[in-house]
Length: 336
Image 1: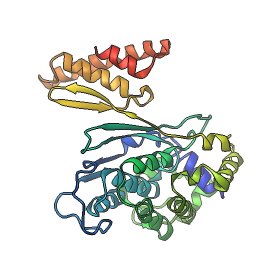
Image 2: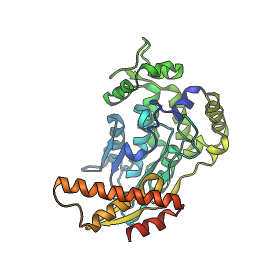
Image 3: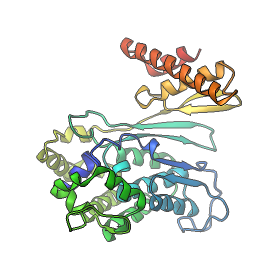
Image 4: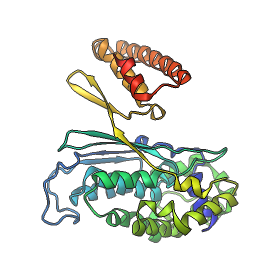
């Protein structure tokens, strides 16, 4: 494995740790299991009418997720396809490195599940052990309908044959600056060959990333964490100064738990039942707003209520962290 993939995995294009949570960059709106079985599942356009909506920071990735929904895929399928497309078209926000949290609501059972795969075992200067791929595999295993290989095909094709750089990604590169070109490996991918960065409309080709995506497509989400590929990846990471071990890769496992539901008026607001993802703090804020009569009033009143609830929630969170409590028990105590 070359240093290029190791650098993109661990540091991301921007090198600013922006891959820490997928929830901030990708949103799929569709009810898991809500679509009726189709005569031609997997064929784009087989679903007529409204199939759901996909929102992402980069338009090509959102289009790929939309196509999955029109092919009869679930919201989880769309999320997986959109994520892997983003890893190609806008890797600074959703590259193969990093991790995140997904909430999935099953329309049939009425249950909402939290899948947490935040990076763990971080080391100085780079993103921690990559968890995104296993997180997406866990999401697909529980809520996917279409074949895993089909969901990764579009992303692999974009990386192998190239895709015009979108305006969104071009702005990301511009914000990073030409300092990115100081890294020879990154310059090969994101440089224009004339001493500058790629600009909007220029082709972005990532052959080595395509090879990695092909391995994930063929071998599943665990392909990056075990076997010779994982060993090569760990060695490549170490060669660029990242003390990543094979054992840390093998031990990367997502956490699947029921989401924490908080009543808010006639609705239930779901958050991850994990403090590290901000779920407990968010649940407390929502609970406080509900206890104060909701979120009515003028814009100034709403801003005041939000600021007050946020201040109290973070104060309680710091006290809990110092006491070393358990997330669910803390949430119950805070919201009672």
